[in-house]
Amino acid sequence: MLKDILQIIFPNLCINCHQTLVLNEKLLCLNCQLELPETQYHLMDENSIEKSLWGKIPFQRAFSFLYFNQEGITQKILHELKYKGNEDLAVLLGKIYGQRLKNSKAVEDIEGIMAIPLHPIKLRKRGYNQSQAFANGLAEVLEIPDYSSLLFRKKNTATQTQKSRLERWNNVKSVFGVKNAETIQNKHILVVDDVITTGATIESCVREIIEKSNCTLSIASIAHAA
Ligand SMILES: [Zn+2]
Image (cartoon, rainbow, N blue to C red; front, top):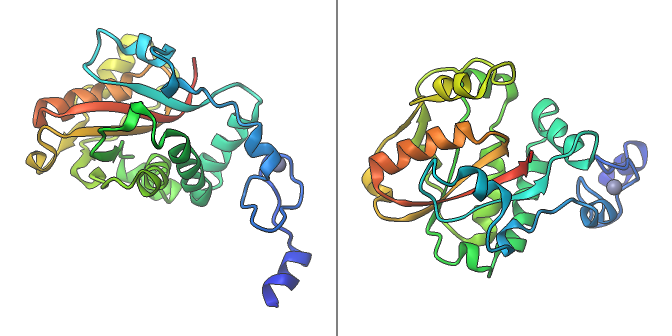
């Protein structure tokens, strides 16, 4: 009752088109969900994230839920995640992507998930880790354990945007650590990031995990800025 009254006074609106959400819709209306620019990378024999990472790090597959385009729906979604603390949206996206991935060859032998950690200072500022929330949604639908707590950051990295590729690489070099690495020894782990641009962060993280645990890794992200 109270919920119904509140719904009339403060209706839940779609974060993209701002239409009032109807029963069973959450955060994104069905129309906008259908308009998400999905990459379908996991269904391709090879995709542009994989091509950009080949020769840099060993991995099995790499795929991303959405294409990132300036001023598009992905941009709005990322803004919600980064600046409005919309953790529920990150989980929802993980669940939707989990449904897409489930039963596909790309994830058939994945045994666990690891979200790339935010530095504690950034985490305090944002209130949550969007990669972790996305990973939670994925893990729930794919029914795989979450090993994210084994991954940690050693120091805060300066902002990446104003730097060259080499500077970025140096900047993220060995900032990650893995504890209790024997837990994931020889497993196939899905490493999850929010947005993959140059892939420098993921490279650094993947190197550290493989060095410490000798596992097989695949990579997933919310969006790919190609
Ligand atoms: Zn909408």
